[in-house]
Structure formats: structure tokens, C-alpha cells
Image (cartoon, rainbow, N blue to C red):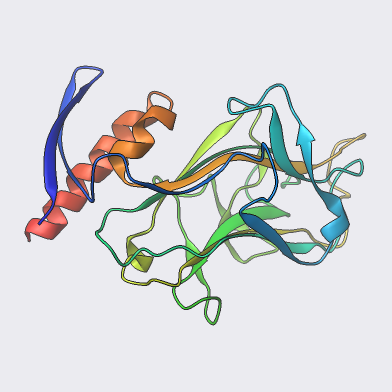
Length: 232
């Protein structure tokens, strides 16, 4: 049984089936230690928490590539603290990120990239997670899967449905960044990076204040789809 509420935004009316009213179970804005994330894998020294006045969450962000660009042959993870998704349903991951990652000069695929992975069993097994609407690149060479690559040009929204993990009380979610052996196709002076801020896991109601328009409508559509799945 879920709490059903009517929500009106931008002229749209949607019925949302929520785990509760305003349930955020994970939040990290990088404004003070101890942080609720850890770095794993290679290139730990290329991570840092830095000031970035452009962040909508600001003023501090987590950044990979703090030493004049990210290194070659990286395979590194920003792992969030373990969360319990066994209570209720409809959990979502939302975050804001800004990046410049080497892609094919024609823009057909990514060479290097960032993707999100999740584990339902405290890290024993990991699975690719796909954002609402799909990754901007359907193929990133270093992963052989879809992912984020190229230039975001601004702080973009990442929004992920965590339904595949929702029955577990030992969920880990991680951001994986990987690069190949060179950046020979990148433009002169290329200094690649990936920055993230405002990482949250919550229900749709609780995340609405942090979702910029027009993505709010995607969130409403996702809520309606989840409700239909449950009714069936």
C-alpha cells in the first residue's frame, strides 16, 4: 500500500505513488567531512573536493582530474555509503555533474567515460545502471557499454531509477570513471575532468525540489509509470 498524492507542476497533473512524504535516505553535498563516499580503484590522488562557484549546489564539489586533467589508463570509483532500499519502492538517484571527457572527434561514441553501477549485495556483484532517458552516448569504448562522455557544457542532471536494487538492504551505488591509454584525439590544451555535487537517493516527492525544469516532467512521467506497474 502506498501514499497516493496529486501533484500539479507546469500545468501537468500526476498521481504519484510514493514510499512516503519527503523521504531522502542519502545526501552528499561535499560541504564538510566526514563525506558519505569513498574512492576505490586507481588514481586516488587525482580526486579531490574543490571549490566551484558554478555548481548549483555549491560551493564545494567532488572532482576527478584535479591535477590539470584526468590521467590515462584510469579505472576509478566514487562509492556511496551503503543504503537500505528494502522498505518501500520507487527509489531514485539524482545528482548534478559537469564534465569534459574525450570522445570521438565526430561525436559518434566516447573514448573515455563515466557510468553508474549498483550492487544489491554489498559489492559482491555489480550491475550497470541506466539513467532515465538513457546515456548520452550509447557506446563508450573503454566500457563497451553506454555512458557519459564528451562535454556537458554546464551542470547536467543525472536521474536513475533504482527499482532493480529496491529489495535489498545492502545496496552500494558507485560512479565509475575510466580512460584509455592516450588522449590523442582531444583538442590542444585538453584538460579533462568529471565533477559531481548534490548526490541524493530518495522518493519522487522528496527529489522534486532538486530537479530543474523541464526534467521535472520526466520525473512525473516516471512516477506514473511505476504506479501503473504496481497496479498490474
